[in-house]
Length: 180
Image (cartoon, rainbow, N blue to C red; front, side, top):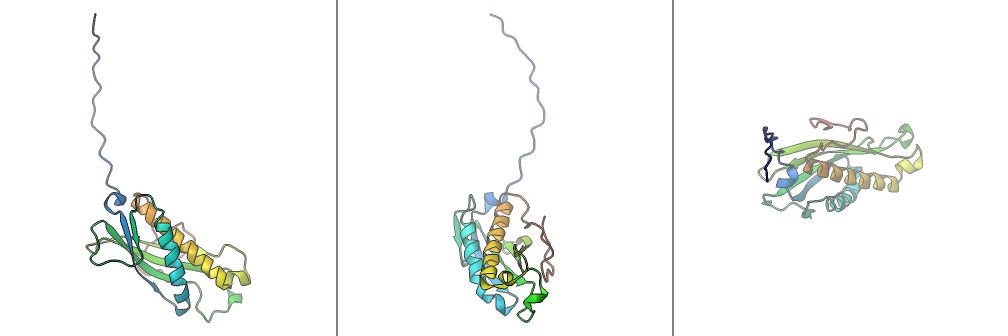
């Protein structure tokens, strides 16, 4: 019986993949969601509820807390931010062709390090008219923005870009940058 020997092809091993944020952070705690205009105060709990619900469906997240605990566990990232919209309470609805609700958000480590900043904007999908400015239209916008922000957090945890799809500038964008 003869053994045939073949030389082995050896080469350098590929570098290990960098750790994903989801490997370190398994919990998401919500901090303050500030509102820039008083007429948005009623939308904050609707946005927050949709956000918590959608965050709970992210694979690998074992806990979502509606209010951040202090001190936070080492595997808990804090999500906080601000809601803004494109119209103040005194802007006549007839001037605007569409309504938008946006926000600026940060993900913060337990030690206070800002891990990611991102902005998002959700536009009313229908045509101009009363529905765009109805209470139900704004409620729908708040829910959609909550789900979009949760999806951005999920992408970030999976080591993808956290940025929300570009749909135009966020009103009052300030020092936050759109991540794409």
